[in-house]
Image 1 (cartoon, chains in turn cyan, yellow):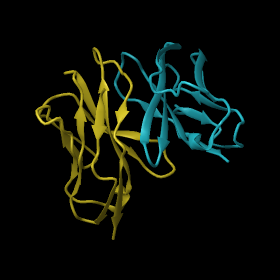
Image 2 (cartoon, each protein chain N blue to C red; image 1 turned 90 degrees about the horizontal axis):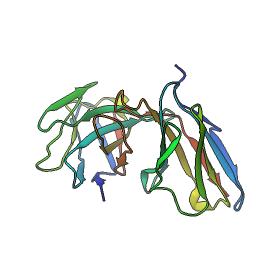
Image 3 (tube, rainbow over the protein chains, first blue to last red; image 1 turned 120 degrees about the horizontal axis):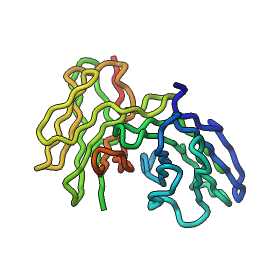
Image 4 (cartoon, rainbow over the protein chains, first blue to last red; image 1 turned 180 degrees about the vertical axis):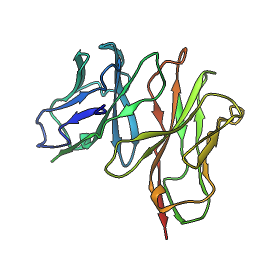
Length: 114
Length: 116
């Protein structure tokens, strides 16, 4: 079991550029969650999918952020026109829906917007 | 909305002293599940403790916590801090239905530093 895989581990973008972050959940896990971690706000929920369907995106900024889960083996978080305030560690977690209540986190992607 | 409050942002302790990290929560729902996640430097956050049962102590790796629904609290404790306990600790709330997972609402975290 390789755990949740996130790529890239580090990404540096210029202001206004696009950033795409990838997450591969644990095989067999049917729910994927995205969180953002900053020193000021701590861990904030962004969005989640269950069986690839979007369930709750209440934490997603309304502009520039989007997430998809095109198949059960990966999810993407896309940030268009990145801004310095988007700099954070983006964490993905997966869960075996209906089997347990523990979310397993990936190592995160550290996004730095210059 | 649902929220979690962790009062201490930074906690510095000497090895051997007791650890107490506070966590209180707000929700209008009765099916609250409370979690403590620990995040060591250069690792992924991982689950330390969880509970949904009122007034029942839960323990793991020397840490313990008791969910008190009357005071909406789930404080994390350890009798004797170790250097290896230095990490970021997050309290989190989830409103699960029929035991299935849901999104976590986290507190802002407490950075614990244990010194010799």
